[in-house]
Amino acid sequence: MSRIPLQPLQNFVAAARLGNLTRAAESLNLTVSALSHQMRQLEQRLGYALLQRQPRGVRVTPEGQRLLDQVGPHLDAIAQALQPFGARHDRVLTVSALPSMASNWLVPRLGSFVAAQPQIEFNLESSERLTDFERQLQVDAALRVGAGQWTGLHAEPLFDEWLMPMASPSLVERMGGVDARPLSEWPLLGDPDGEWHRWFALAGDTAPSRFVAMLNESEAHHRAALDGFGVALGRVTRARLLLDSGQLIALSPHRLKTRWSHWLVYPPRSSTHQGFLAFREWLHAQAAEHARHMETLVAPGG
Image (cartoon, rainbow, N blue to C red; front, top):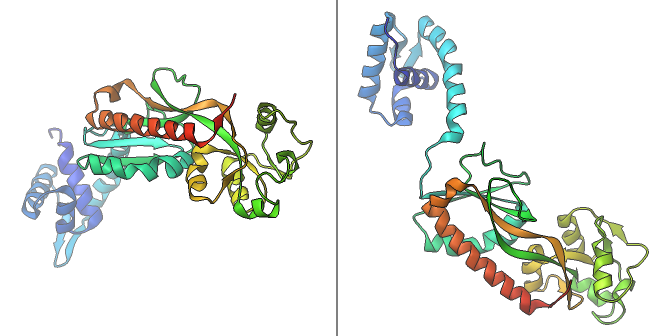
């Protein structure tokens, strides 16, 4: 017997699993008559019936069940292996970003990009894990934080990250106002990287010997500050919307530049992706606006 084409086998598996030729044809973008014709041809080539027609669908014959058990898992494995190699289209764009960057910086701005480029289907993957562009071929670019050195990838700077002491209005009121006492006397939320010591050195003061609590995650810092628990040395990118809305108040004109920045990172293959190129231009414009806003927010420091 000559080799059987893969497509009729895939169609048989779909019909057998759904138990209905109409639903199977819809899932395969075929007409019912075309699918029925393929099933009859496959049965003729094999020499036995695979599907038994019934008033409300189809039933797999014993021979058909054996074929399904043998072929189905292999077709599933092929489909899974080919998934990362799906066809790439200029009108489909997938970008990866950290959850905090996605929710607090990118998503609030994304409406203007979607409005300007309605023909582009934009997909955002929010994950703490770094994108492996060699394996995740469906991802076109990523927003990352670091020093800008990623082997084999293009990395373009977007903007620096800054730290500022910030607190809730309720805590400011309890302390008697922003300038009522030195910041070292406020309940400070400590960080494991020692950034408070750098900030106090920048401000010409000495950091306290102890903190009201030690928190090793930025979301916890901002949440505790919002709840009035203490003063966070917060990331401005993460907290900008909270500062602009008055939910958090900056306690000093000094801001401390971190050792890392925000970057647009992408593999060489994305350089010809028209959807990505449009997003890249838009993103740099948004980053420039953010940097200008930072210049007016507070006085810079080392």
